[in-house]
Image (cartoon, rainbow, N blue to C red):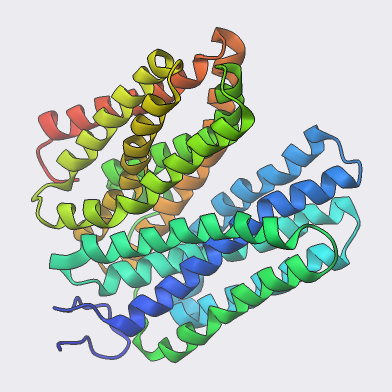
Length: 394
């Protein structure tokens, strides 16, 4: 099997499993930490009598911390090395996870959130860079599909652990910290194979947000629709006449679509010359699905069928967008672009719930669907402009 020399980011002809396992371990820790931590901390704050406004403000620190950490991640990796930076991030994330148990002062949870989610963001960015830099060009979509599937599993496992462990005592915090620490083992074992960043990125960080706009815009839409949908769909569903359990099941169906379509879409992207066309198709399906929601609100089964495929299309924006990014850039530029990718995702997670919630307040319950359709529509317009007016693959 052809493998890259130690410490390089040269592409290989076959999947390089130590690198894949190290990146997957990191992203599993990210998914579980977020999936377990967000509901756990919110429930604890509510039990302590913290107002919903302050709980929301504290929770928003996650997105803000991600936006702050993403631009400096590449600089840290350039100075200390990719694997070393990830190991330090594991240490900070695990210690701060336990800190939420031992530190009871609510106001100290704000800087603690910054440390925790900042470290998680570093893991997020560098695991994506590592896997993108070492993925075989001909099988990049498949590798990133596996990566995205594991991330989805991590997000699903976190709430499951929360439902089992509850919010009492140190156990949920210890389990969360332990999961993060376990990720250090494969990262350490594969440390000599992590891609090197011998050069600094050529451009300012914000230039990378717009350097490959079809990729960064795709993950922005993904973040907005995913976070806004997960946050507000239970409200939309119950107002539409479904029971709480029926609305929860619909969310589960959407999560199943998110899970099962990542690898097939990644493999499909490997056989498409211009991945922008696939991204445009996914957003068109997403737009059609959003516009169908008000029509299907009388039928749970039809709604479930649409959400199954819709969830797959939404998740495909992430996988195919990341694959497109990896096909366009290399080395330090790819690392910086991966940071811009996560930055755009974080902006989406902040903007999505706000825009969708405001639309529901202004236009009624179906404002949920109209706002999501608006996000997809914006991307459709961008796709047309980039593909028709600018045939260069960017």
